[in-house]
Amino acid sequence: MRKNLYCGVDLHSNNAMYVITDEQDKQLLRTRLPNELPVVLQTLAPFRPRLKVVAVESTYNWYWLVDGLQEKKYPVVLAHPSEMDQYDGIKEADDLTDAAFLARLARLNILPRGYIYPKEDRPVRDLLRRRTLVVQHRTGIMLSLQNMAQRQTGQKIGWRTLRKLSPEERAALLGAHDCLAFVTAEQIELIELLTKKIRRFEKKVLEHAQLRPDYTHLLTMPGVGIILALTIMLETGDLGRFPTVGDFTSYCRCVRARHLSNGKKKAHNNGKNGNPYLAWAFVEAVHHAIRVCPQAQSFYDRKKAQRNGALATKALAAKWSKAAYYIMKRQEDFDLTRVFG
Picture: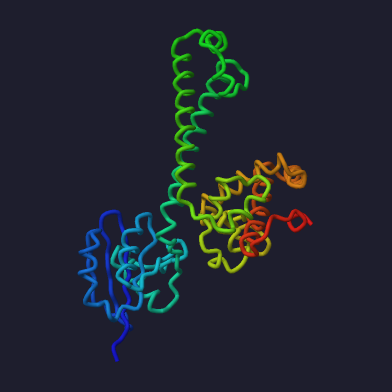
């Protein structure tokens, strides 16, 4: 009877360490390979019939390797790095020990696994993520322009107000120095250009997004429009990977990350563990919701009076994330009575 083999891959930007072990942890292969799929496939080919798991470390550049191995029917899985801790007392650690550690966890069937997002849906999701980067860049320019105006005048002046002013009116408001007028005009032009680019991103997303029933139901949530509904749908992916609503809310970064012992706070856990795009989506949603939903406004005001605005926003975002989970799970519209009682 042939024994199973297990492969661990410690992936880097331009190369990776590959370790293949048997069921007794004996290393049959340990080699560093360039990030070239033909070389990888050629190296793994002699072991392929016996490979039970190929565990690839989930880094920023795993797409090419996982997709290539899946196409060749390798039993590839993503290893979740934030849930793996080697023994703290280890004397020496390097790429070889890291790859061997992945192979050992795979052999013991205790490897924390990440989600392999479907290849066919990934380009649209990533396009929407790039749109978010452009929006953040535009927001930074808006704030920079408004801060400059406030420094010069002592007043809060929105960039739209500055855009409507003539060059003479801007000079009278901000000062006659040519640099101030130049910066104002150039930043307004940048904002308008980025706005056009954002619209182009949105158009391309809508051209290619495969809208599921989830999308229509998510649109019924106060504060959730087309872009936020798409973001929640695409970033969530397969809802079945979240066994409970708590798992989903945690993934959305809508719960506190702290460590308690005997009722006392001992430390902070990893608050950045989860999906930053879902975290952003739900915070944006509740910012809009408190303007149009009296119940959301009342909940926010009550929490803000108890603690502060940031925690109030996070608490409401947690409610919205739980509502979104059940909306997608049950395929039903948003129901205020279930959210607030």
